[in-house]
Image (cartoon, rainbow, N blue to C red):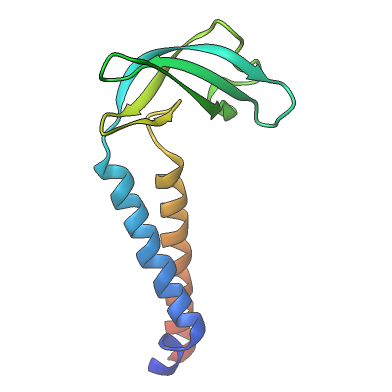
Length: 127
């Protein structure tokens, strides 16, 4: 049984599980605050569309970020001049998203799940 856990595949599974959990922990530790933003540019050539959003930082300066609009805003998407809510990490004002969650949380959960399933498969294979 221990042979399968300490094989290269077992070590990869452990790495996926631990790495995914660390990503989720990191994303949950950085609480984001909602701030009002405005779309100032939109790229029609990418899928999903990318927009440039201006927003105030927690310190009062105006910042901009290029973000993926994705499925959050439906088929119509965002157009220049639209008001949006931008979620900002107060410790790192350039770390922004258009949704309250982040891709780090999504990818972390996916990696941890793949690692756990691979570990379960290896344990089942070893018994």
